[in-house]
Length: 150
Image 1 (cartoon, rainbow, N blue to C red):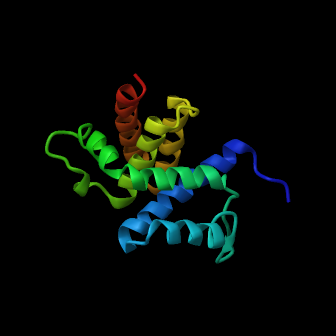
Image 2 (image 1 turned 90 degrees about the vertical axis):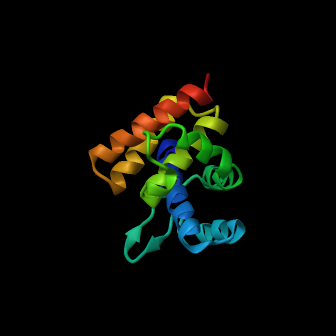
């Protein structure tokens, strides 16, 4: 089996990170157990006849652990970008994880260009939502990037 190109492996890692953090929020799964479960059963595996793409495991681990460790900082930054009257609590739980992961990359992964990180999470949003929500992700992460990268 040949390994996936790095960009595909990173895209798969981003999608898996959103799924892992969603699971953590819904079930309260401890970080170590969460990472182990995804390593053993999700990343690059076949589940119910659905092949999960091979993911860059170290990148997945960094995003999930980074969001977990910096959640308060990330949420404060995101909260400041929402429209008047909106709070993170009002956001769809999957949407919140997409925004958290994108914000973490913009804050902590200087090796990933801002436009690449934003575009990747817009693509993740399209896996769950329609174009309106994908544009929302683009707008919020673009605003975060202006703060995080300047």
